[in-house]
Amino acid sequence: MTQDAVSLSGVAGRYATALFDLASEKGATEDVAKSLAAFQAMINESAELARLVKSPVFSLDEQQKALKAIFAKAKMSGIAANFIQLVAAKRRLFVLPDMIEAYRRLNDQAKGVVAAEVTVAAPLSPEHASALRQALASVSGGKSVNLDVKTDPSIIDGVIVKIGSRMVDASVRTKLNAIRTRMKEVG
Image (cartoon, rainbow, N blue to C red; front, side):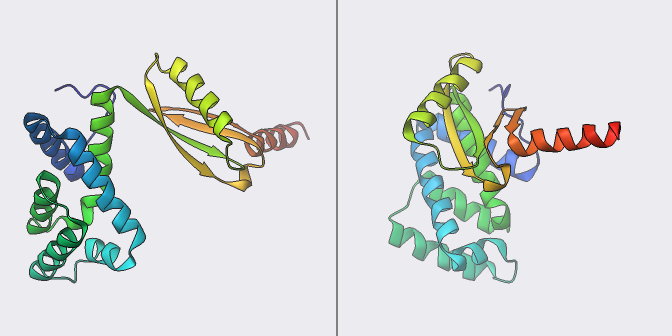
């Protein structure tokens, strides 16, 4: 498997790559991606679960019992649930969010999807989001683009786009800072 567009390293990269290879063998890459995304959403919504994942004070037994209860309630099983249990058994649960992100990137690459992080001053209308997605698709060689839009009023106006290793900052804040720097150089 080649990883041209996705650069993975460290523990998260190794675990995500192994999981992706296993899911590919079983023909379950999408199912695993959905389960991992659902689990990440649970982490994001629950301070207690986030603490269980990140804190080393919980024993392995406590983590595994809690995970089994969560899986039962969420009706989660299969490769993703087994993977999370393995990560807990290896005492690497604190790296799980990074593993989930690395898996998502591998899965997107396999599907020909490019992830773009977009920062705007105000929420995008559906029309603007669609136009931006189309523009980024043409720049990325016609690949499908998955937008991750964040709102940051401090950029004043404009847009900051990061796609792969490329970043374009067309925000008013950056332009004002550039003008301020030039004025200091002149004066």
